Length: 182
Image 1 (cartoon, rainbow, N blue to C red):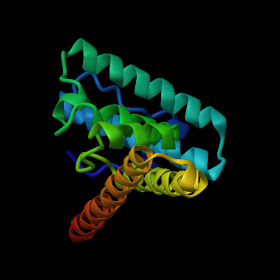
Image 2 (cartoon, rainbow, N blue to C red):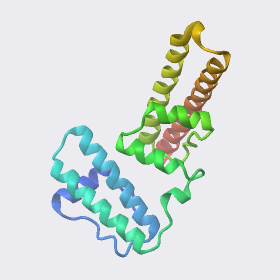
Image 3 (tube, rainbow, N blue to C red):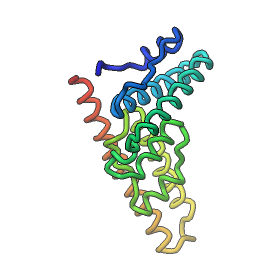
Image 4 (cartoon, helix red, strand yellow):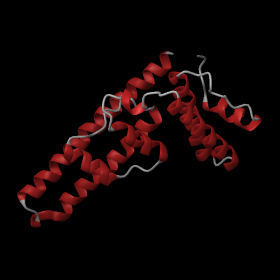
């Protein structure tokens, strides 16, 4: 399958030349959907024509329907941790929040990151840094009032999130290197 780029998806959308997808296999459908999602994100950031975004979203929904009809395995099933799929989806939608990061840190369920795109990784890292800062601020705000258990829990989640940020930054760095080599 040739390389796909969000700019091509945008141009195809504007010209009305969208992929039918009916003859595509599951892997090809996943690639088309991924590129179309990136194109929607690109159009949002650029503040471009909302009609193009709407058409792309309709295309994504159509291709997603084809995936289901063909019995394609969920993209989440292909990840090292199935729970990561929801985090990546929220990263794509721009709906990540610090409270969930803190909760996942305390439950030991932070994302693996290897299945995320560079854009998703950047968004996850940004929110993780905010969550880490929030935990630091909680510790400072509690001061002497906090019990040892409360301080210990806050310090532990801060350390876990800090380690996560470093690990995800390494994953992102490696993905950039891999992308540059291609």
